[in-house]
Image 1: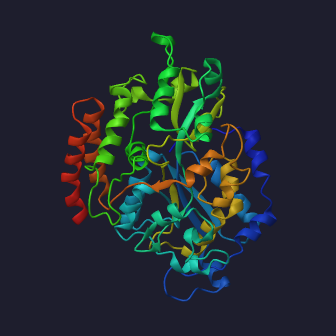
Image 2 (image 1 turned 45 degrees about the vertical axis):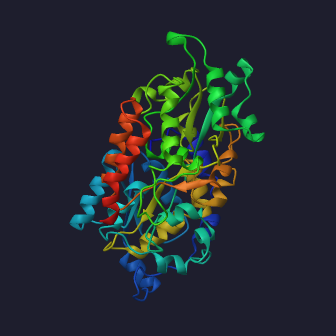
Image 3 (image 1 turned 90 degrees about the horizontal axis):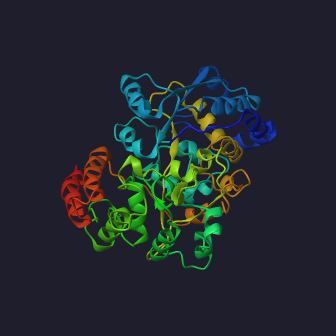
Length: 445
């Protein structure tokens, strides 16, 4: 996650695209209770819901404040106060607030921290709210509104405990002008011809490398790689991190071992980039912006990170081994158990998660929306990058982030072992066996 820069001129232009009438139509839903208790009457609810606190992270204050201004143009709802904290501290601070009973009414929670809150019973089951929504169908994939992969991620025992806000599939970005100058077939051309494979990717990266020293042009880099970067390759090779019910670690199987080793060998054996892939020195951003990198891993967030860049770049899916596959995660909106105004909080959530609300957020800095129709609209399908529609193809091949209930402990094991593979001190096979040995007891807990 990162903050995004947006010019004031564009911000105001984009926000004007949402009419109060459209927003009112999107959000004129029926409010349901958070529990089995009967819902309060509208008058009672409005009397109770005098103020809603909506916690977010980073520098999204201006964007969400303006969205809430639009919200108030369409309804007599209670005032919404936006509070924020830096992302690095946000979830720990929020967990402390939850534990002490100092509760917001709506809280953003990112995918890989969702289990920390859900496991402690801090989040409301939103089933009754979703069932009462006038256009969503709780029995339909993605409620007939969101991408189902991210909607399912925020369920527990089949029940929704968070409403998804974002998707961020990962692909490959490439410098279009550089490929044209060097006369090399582009990743997009390979993808269109169904020749965009691991082998082609490697050959292409090597063919693009030029020069020496500070003038050297690298073929590809991506670092420091995290679990999602590596999981992509495992899925592309037909493997997985866990079995379906997460009772077994599958990393020691040949498809996963081969994918992990292949990923780190992009530096260890082929030296496509400047440093091992767990190092900060392998970061692609600066090199790509300087015109010294042909290809890099990207996500939907890369667009805003390059908002001021002069690089002419395009987007394609990541190459396939036996299949195309990519990761998606994102953040969500939740209602804490014990929140003072849960019904008013739900009104804010369903407004924010409406098509018009999602389009507003896309136009004002959000990376990718969990709302399918928003992603298929011009709020997302604009350039740069060239070929933004490739992100929609990626969404057809996505997998949710691999996680378990004791996810922090698992990630500590994962990161330690991947550090050793990245510098060549351990093979992917030995690291995978060690991760399996230490992680499987966590699955039983």
